[in-house]
Image (cartoon, rainbow, N blue to C red):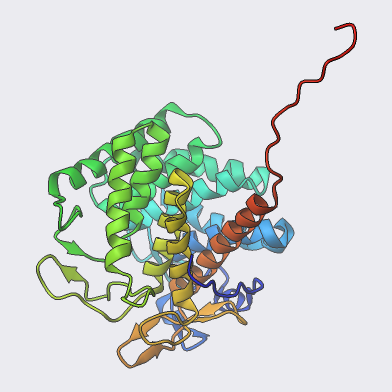
Length: 369
């Protein structure tokens, strides 16, 4: 495993600064929230996931109000008549779209699943599960790969806590379609389901790995691991640091984009490598987690720190000229998510090292036996 970067105490000051009456605001100018862009389901869902993660370390009372605010936002976003979430919301609470993207719907379902699996508060869990049950049927028809992946992961989180035939059916159907796209499109030199590497790429193999384990499909798990190994290989520099695909993307056979590099790519790799490690126990996946976390703290193409741990903030990415100094919601939430998953992984490593070796039982002859 590469040298590991320091862990930092949880700091929620930038989250608090970015949070308005209804939830976390999307954008910032520098460290100052920019209310002109209002709110969106994507970021509120991610903030709810961070609340659940922080509740494990800080205690639930420290995050309960924030988590309930996030859940109420998602409840308000859901349109029962359409079975879909709206996404964009103005500061006055009015909705700016009638139907949000498949991606935002998928992220909402993933956040609800993680909330149920986190079991932080029975009332919150019941409310999250109820909303999930109402929102998951429409996701069955989703066609966008990343939305499918988020729904798969949300379903898996729910199924880890409560067996449910309808949820299981959605997971199996979407996982079959997602894995089918890999089988139909992937080649030995481009083991990917699309002609272009775009955004949050590691989300896709993560979903296949998780679904393969849930469904007992070795082939599905193997497809996810193969795709993830490729992503890790092509996004690791010659000296061993993470170098994510830039936001101008990489078309097959074309020129790879180097900048701007986004925090979401590093965190997607942390989470996918975590799922791979849980599936295989292979230490190279733990090393990939650490490499991705280290990107935030200076182990990157420019050698500059992207996160601001002392405020719980994160800059919006790496440009050719340096760090984008804006500290928007997505970037900040990606840092906070990555940090908590690394914290949990290192704690598990420590427990494994400290656990006493298993001792073979010794048979003792007892007089008169």
